[in-house]
Image 1 (tube, rainbow, N blue to C red):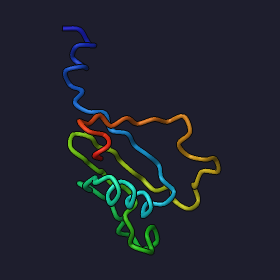
Image 2 (cartoon, rainbow, N blue to C red):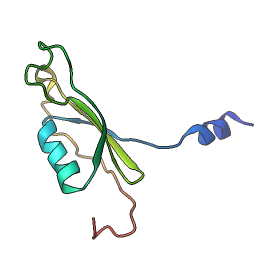
Image 3 (cartoon, rainbow, N blue to C red):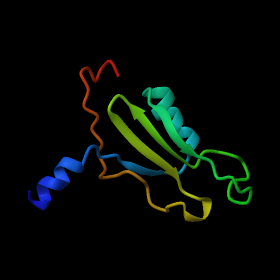
Image 4 (cartoon, rainbow, N blue to C red):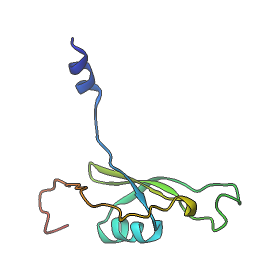
Length: 98
């Protein structure tokens, strides 16, 4: 068996990983708006890394689709606009129903 065919058998899912500048707004969009469910999340437990106790990373799923979100720390916020040139297509039976 070739290396390429071994890799294709082992690959089960591609999961986009998005850096976000506002986790609350992103969760409102994906969870409240589109209906994703949060399956995994990380809230830093050290007070100096997370004084407000908020989620900084999460894994969201909707059907067989999944995405990961991670909030940029304040000192690493990007200066450029995020997202241009990036497309994510969710394949579904009825896109209008979504």
